[in-house]
Length: 254
Ligand code: ADP
Ligand code: MG
Ligand code: MG
Image (tube, rainbow, N blue to C red; front, side, top):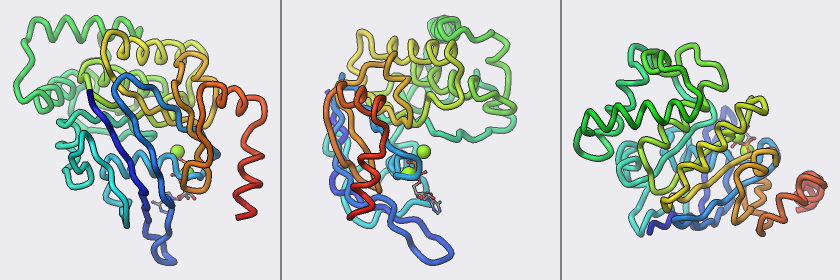
């Protein structure tokens, strides 16, 4: 069992006008086996939350805590976070010039497990995960994110998640820019990773459509840098029908 606990998290970024507070006291707990959706309008700070948990140097935690099983995540280097069992798929993944997908995956797996995977099972695991995601085997020899289409980037993220077997995965806008077929394939990948494991998932999304394929246990509505409302799957249905207007006008009044 793993528990990711975010308590009263405040995060600022540096702007030309000085520091600007983006996260204004976020509280959230994700446990093994649970799927949480964070939904909210553009600019509400969803990606800032993901980057802050990932340890992106641009995002300054001014107060609050993030812990994984009581361990201070914010004190860990990004690679330590991965070894501790956190997986973060970023909305804008970076290119890794000269490193093939195949090498990247094996290096990451070795770093996380502390030993190289057994070659024969590893090759089989990679092959079957790629087949499940309808990825051509030639993809493994391409350089990471170099010239990847939007859909290829997302599939590559899910491929990493399936193979690295994290405790808690944070997926930021895994649905953005995907056509219906790709969305279904990627969603099935997430569901497969959850099946028979106790993976906890924090799914960050602007749109409700991915939640038709990946069923959240909990839905948190994010507005103006904090959680404005929480509920079960029915909250996602309400948002699908009503949009974010209700929350935005409430935020404007504060
Ligand atoms: P979301 O993912 O919900 O669309 P973001 O977390 O990307 O929102 O952005 C939240 C707010 O923080 C936006 O107003 C955005 O312009 C601002 N912001 C995010 N990152 C930076 C940055 N590095 N520099 C300046 N402003 C930023
Ligand atoms: Mg935002
Ligand atoms: Mg975002």
